[in-house]
Figure 1 (tube, helix red, strand yellow):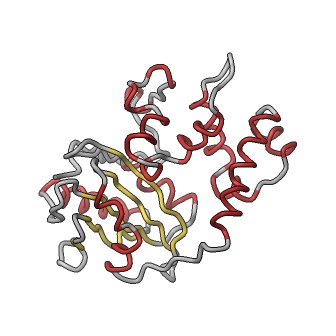
Figure 2 (cartoon, helix red, strand yellow):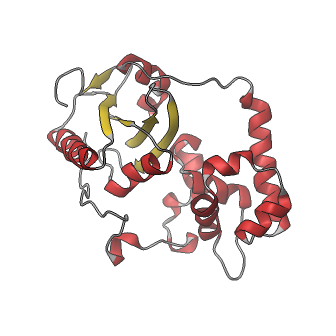
Length: 245
């Protein structure tokens, strides 16, 4: 299994060609790519932040598709800032949302804080085993999912971002999706993690080539690719431990 067909050209301002940068509306997506269907079929772990927001909002407006609204919420406000926002008026004014939409978002985030906030602890990833235990559930997924784990200088997890969701044997990885969260959250290092639905964690040639190319880009940006870990059935493979990177 592999992370194949990847696109690894670096664009310094995350500029890409017109075809690559096209943002699709909900009605243009095939059924299996729509947020609700992805949630039902694969679970919430594979959804990106804006897709979760789109599910919370439910529908858009006559002028703006729900996915466009959700992307704007994340891109313009930021997931970190959004998680602390409790003012309906402020959120509505900042993002041109209706009061109903702002209430939906804030209520969902508050519920998450109440149910999980007290139990959530800071996560430190000091070894491949720590990473495996943190994402061991991904070994049961039926499609390849690539995570980017963004760390500070003390190896504390700043953000867990889903970089790509692929097919049974392949995921598409764009350079901008790997490094944009690192820049926004001032991460020092990145650990790449993806699963092999086959259950075998050994990397393919494409996995290794992808990792080495991303590491070359990371060096230019003064960010470190600390490891690339592949998770199978109760097993994992660390490229760092095996001397590949």
